Length: 458
Ligand code: 5AD
Ligand code: SF4
Image 1 (cartoon, rainbow, N blue to C red):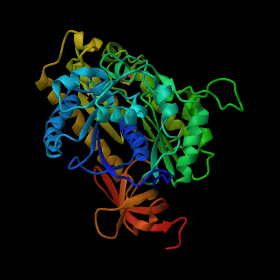
Image 2: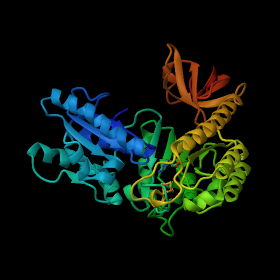
Image 3: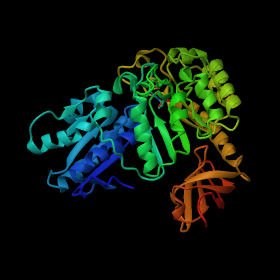
Image 4: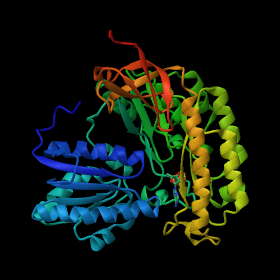
């Protein structure tokens, strides 16, 4: 499924994406910007005319990966006689700017997350060997307005960015500095993009934002009035024909309002899955992180969500070894995990980020203590994830088929709870929602037997 108005590709672009779903979305949009000037995507840097690294700055490791990748790219560029254009995009570009070109002269272009629509113009400047090679202005709305209205999609699942940036300033996090202030797109623009996706066969959309439930987009022009909340937006998108599943990520506990929680119970398209990062279970640490809520307030939100949608699967992010974290604080995190019982969670060792308040705090936790805590937490989370997956054995679950499975004759899809599901079935089912009886589960996926393809004769 591709856009029909672009010329046949004459040049190759390789885009490597690091980090969050926001970057995945942005990489897709960069492809849309590049298609009209003749660039078609390829799977590796070998022989590419353009290489874009869409980078992540969230933890030190993520940033370092970019520089080591640039070392590899340098060799590839030499093989093209130096013709390959190398661009660094994303949050490292935003945070480090010109420093990247100093540290890695192989880089021709540096562009921050708000500048992707300028990519063709920047490539032209490289060819002419004139003009600015760095674009790190913050103008989120200009980016959204300037990106092509058409999107090329790849399969029945798509991301749709509804807001960017963050004003929360958690003391450990670089996002407010790299992605800028919170900004929501107008509802009309989002609906247009969603309709366009549905028309191209998308059945499931994931609404994206660094703080997606802080969404407050301008109401549809015909209706006017106050900005809409995420709950209102989801209910509205649910009415678009073809959109069968709606998700959103990532949320902040402080913005989890009652209407959004209610929508989980009364809007069938809202999938029973909520990624609601808590970071820590200790009130002292939550305060030092500037999260703006206590562990019990978080537990209360979870209680309300489960009341509205008892079937919901919960996900979270955790940081261990935040400055000042004692054994007791860490135990409070373990207790919160036991209380909530997660379907999946992501956990990280605290990584000091230059320019953030936490990096200057006292009481940095030794690396070996961080390691031990991370191991203990991940063991518990793995047990919960496996138990959650196994709880589906024997159930018949609706699976949105996303493509061919790894083995011959197998298809692959996604459950309402974000689990990967494999079953024997034809790849032609791609884009359909089918019933699969689950008969096996591991920590990372489910397997089952095709019972019924709801919309097709088998
Ligand atoms: N160190 C470790 N983890 C971090 N995260 C954000 N900043 C840091 C940091 N400095 C984690 C948080 C966030 C996820 C995207 O990354 O858990 O929710
Ligand atoms: Fe970072 Fe906190 Fe904003 Fe999330 S809410 S993006 S962790 S500052």
